[in-house]
Structure formats: C-alpha cells, structure tokens
Image (cartoon, rainbow, N blue to C red):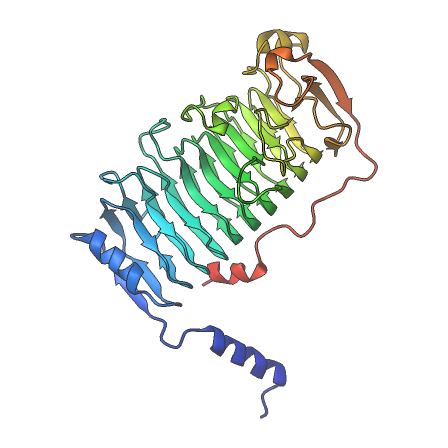
Length: 402
C-alpha cells in the first residue's frame, strides 16, 4: 500500500525535527546533587530530558541551562524539590538562556534571588512548576518566582508561586504569552505582565496577594509599548496581604487590596473574571505616576475594556488617601472601578454598566493629594473592541502533552 503524500511529508518533518540521539539523563537527589545536576544541564544535547528523581535536592548555588531544546522534568511539584535554603550567592535558582526549553513537574524553594529566570529564551514552557519562599511574605524574599523576560512564545500552565517580594508570575518585555490555570498567592503582585504584547491571562487563581493581576507598561526599558492583552476567566479574590516589596520598586506603590490594575497600556480587556472581596478596588485603571524622560513612552491608559465581570464585595477598606471618607461617601464601600481620571475619553471602554470613582488628577505625575474624587458611570458600549491574536504559539501545547 502506498503511503499518502501528506503522511510522508509529516513523517519527514518529524524526523528532521527530532534529534537523532535524544536521551534521558537521570539525576537523583542525595550527596553531591549540586555538581551532578549542573553537569547534566551542561552535557545535555538538544532533545534530551534531564530527569530529576523524587526527593529534596539540597543546593548551595544557582543552576544554569544554555542548551536549546532540553526538557527538565521532575517527579511532581510536591515530590521533586530543588532546595536553595543554603544558597550562598544572591542570584536566581535556575537561569535558562536557550530556546525551546520545557520546565515541568518540580519545585524550587527559598532562593536568595529570583526562583526561575529565563532570558531571551524563545518558546519556553513552564508546566506544573512550583516556586515558593516557605517562610511566608518577607521583603528579603526573592523578587520574582517564575520570570521569563525578552522572549517570544511563553506558556505558563498549572504552576504555583508564593512569597515573591515583587511578582509571583512575571512576564516582561515579551510577546505571544499564555498564563493559565495557575495559583499565585501571598506575593506582592500575583501575576504581572509588563511591557509585553499579545498575552492572555486565563483561568488562574490570584488570592492573598497585595495585588492580584497587574498589566503594566514602564519607561526606559529595551522593549516598550505593552498592550493587546486579555485578562479573562480568572478568580481574583481576597487580595489583602500588606505590601512587602522593597522600597523603590514600582510595585511598592500597589495598594493592599488591589484586584486587577492596568497601568499605561493600550487595548487590554478585563472580562469574564470573578472579582471578589479585594478591599481597595476590584479594577484600577491608572497612568504611570512618576516623572520620566523616555520620549518613546506613553504614560496613559488607552482603550482599556472593563467588563463584563462578576463583582462581589470589595472596596470596603481602601488604601488610598482619604479612603475612609471616600468609603463613607459611597455608603461603606468604594465602587468596583477606580480610575485616576487621566488618558482622555478613550481611556476606558465599558463592557458592562458600572459605577466608578475617578480621582480626577490634574495631570500625569500629580500627587494623589491633588485628587478631586467624583463618581462616574459607564454604560455598556454598543461595540466593544477586543484584542486580537493573543497567546502562546499552538506548537507549545504539544510539549505539555508528552
């Protein structure tokens, strides 16, 4: 029987894509784990699997991977633990600088710096990875838990992060991003998308953070112009942890009790989420608050679509100047949408009827003490735009099915 031409073509492509001598490199926990694991990461070839056994790997220094197409796979995020409690340096636990890497089914605990950082690593997958600082929220914890930056193609799926002093799950200066089905709790920012485009944040639980989900765009970075992002189908609830970020960090200004905050982005849709019991505000749309000199930068929100979302409670303990008086004026709780009043008529596009509070700041960078707060009401727009072509490349899905 003659094989159909389409099958021949598919088989040929698969054969060309697959390394001829891909192998599994087992690494067990136990004595001299640091040297054995780093050696495996150095000697791995494209297509190889570095297979971490069950147990606790006691490590004293950071690890690095710079080989394309490698999978690092453990026995489960509760079974395989890379323990950096005794780490001597201040760097990340694992640094990845190569493309087409898959990290899955293991945990990283108590790094002195970031948990797992990937830089310039295109088409990277984090699947069922846990990063935690087990002593709870502390300023001395590492800044970021899962931290891909400067990448094209990022899939973060089924992960857990707790205790980060900046952002639990952070994707920065990247494009074509999916963050889904993950848990972020007891971080300053639960999930943050910064200076990035074409992202979808979907089906996550962000709880007990200072702020649940942040979509930021900042000046003076190599990649500018964040936007075209969807925040959809998430549970953003009870984000009430006091802010423990080191002074001077941009997230140090995030009020305790923030649900979703969008700052200085364009075309961001916040829709289909459950936003519950975030004591400052369920959704905040704001401009960049600081002075800047970067002429490429637009500090204002543009075309931020809010709704429809399910709103439950919240606004009952606002961490804003004059918060108690504002709360009293609204009958005991602020409305679900807070806006600094900047960005013009197209700053917010309503996806549902909402009452909001505008601070009516006079200009970008103005002190909150210059606010002239007043209520406003949004009525659902006849035509609500939506971001286009968001999310990680479909080809990354196959790597979590293996």
